[in-house]
Image 1 (cartoon, rainbow, N blue to C red):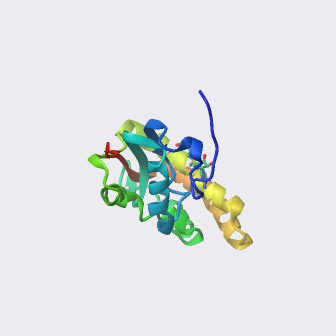
Image 2 (image 1 turned 60 degrees about the vertical axis):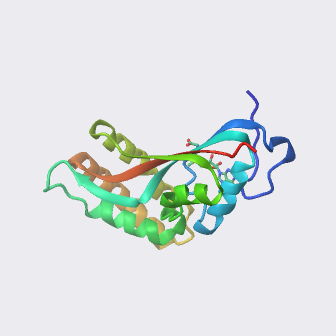
Length: 182
Ligand SMILES: C[S@@+](CC[C@H](N)C(=O)[O-])C[C@H]1O[C@@H](n2cnc3c(N)ncnc32)[C@H](O)[C@@H]1O
């Protein structure tokens, strides 16, 4: 195996152009901004051989809702954390994710197929706990100390609400398409 690291917003290095049969991309949703999505998808396509496949898997953060194991579960901190997070950084609300099939069509990919899934019940809380890292990261990276304190105060409360049976739920999207052969 050979590993290469480069900036996906920059020019694709010559030695990586048209090299791969399959490119799999995952979890770029909190990395790319809406206005960068078309360029990034175009850059990723440059990695593929003609006839190669692109598979792209993302959480659709716009599908956010709260699920509860019973109607009485508390969810105030979970709701407030989501509200603050969305205000703190626009990358937490990536509008480009549900548009991936559209970008594939624009790029003239063939055999485009989308798989849209919600977490099965036995995975839902585990996936939610992975997502609780996002407010933790925002608390550490924001330049706004008052906001950072609010995140830090709410995270333990959100953990308690999680143990009480409330959690964030998101739909996940995987889109496959084939680059034209000729
Ligand atoms: C949320 S992680 C996902 C990692 C992995 N794909 C996965 O699903 O476990 C986002 C990744 O994007 C990478 N990244 C951020 N900005 C990038 C850029 N401009 N060009 C290439 N990679 C970038 C980060 O280094 C990080 O590895």
